[in-house]
Image (cartoon, rainbow, N blue to C red; front, top):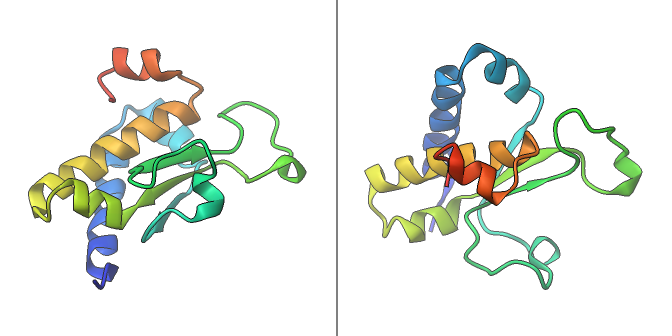
Length: 123
């Protein structure tokens, strides 16, 4: 499956979602790049994550010191193949899930745990 067209849709969805954020969050969100990958690698999955993971925030959260020697710099990873499979190949569901997954991982960038992400409706 060629995921390039889906990646372009996901990139556009993330860009539009960023524009909808409150001004303070827009500015802060610009500090964390979004990387679009076809599938999660074995290195990313390790023993901690399931192969069907939709997205992941890696690196230190916003405001924390960044020491790249300790691991990856802050970034949001979105896994296009898994998002498409989760959406059962439905374009509208895919776009909605890209938006929601991006917001969820952005919440982790801001240092919010799973409960705080859920409280803000980002689950």
